[in-house]
Image 1: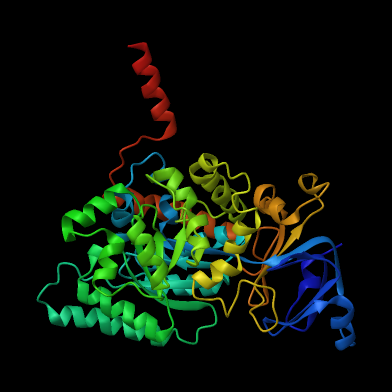
Image 2: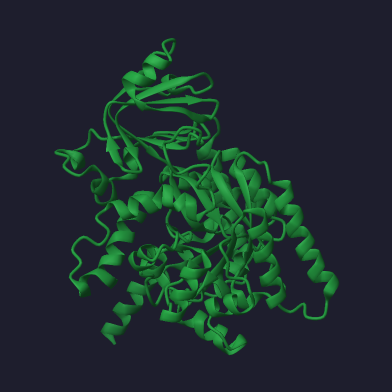
Length: 468
């Protein structure tokens, strides 16, 4: 019987799972040595055990040890309003997210992030990429909550300067704060700094260019939302005369530090610009289904060598459902019309949820693989479930059949963060109770405008309309 006591990584721990997921696929009879938060050795069990005779292997029958999943695009401080976006048209950031996040003080931003991080860990994500909070008091709170829950986080600092034309001092303060932010978190074990512009037209050409240059020089990610939906493309054309991705290119901000969220509406020219730039993309299939006009052709950009990861966009923090949605959405929008019955063959989506997603997030040398020297960010999955009996294609089965309730253990930096869905070292249910009260207060006072009613009211309206 496996218990959390047996998974104490404060000392050396030699794990012997029945299956080990490597970038080339699942393997058996493998051993993984975890030491001081990292994978110290990975290889055939007999060889690893022989090289470390003083450490007894811990057998993990009917278990898969796999890399933790990477959410390449999310919004950690939006958890108070998860269901408020249901049924809403595209530009929900204007009517829901900006008003709601702007009301969050540091305490509320901390609680919202901690709730998001808990959901992400429960969904198998050991790394999340946050696109930046609009809470003026919230950036340090987000970082603190990430550390306290133990999740790895690429944290974006928003550097918008639209409307500050002629105010050189204000623009300089933003840029100086960005430099300070990168320096302060340069050596943080869990929180990796990033800079962000919400949408390209939310900043001057100069700020876009300088922020992109700064992130390229520092080896960090520059995040922005690009070509998310038709309204965003048209808004950019009206405001700046260029489509969002074209605008980045024209002002010199499209470079290899970029992590572009969505990119669903790309012209052939834009695809060429993206390919040549070295920038990465976050493919957000659930967001496209819930509030978009189009779906990124992830298979095409992958074939062209564009790095990409899978992102939730804050929709739902369930990594296995995200992989399933990534494949299904790609199949429905691009595969069926071409008779592509493989549409990535399962492995494509697992790869881009793990090591390829880590590379897109700028953390390919840190996490995403079970490999010697990398951070010990991993999941233990119980395969002794009806959905995996009989098992013929474990990689594709993870994409289509796996459930988050199979996750027994979640490790980040070698520390056990969750056991069977719950943290062992802090009170998650207490957090939930606290959030329920504060979220209701903050959402009620925020100037949110919803277009679509809640489900029960929508049903009642339909019935009234049918009866009239």
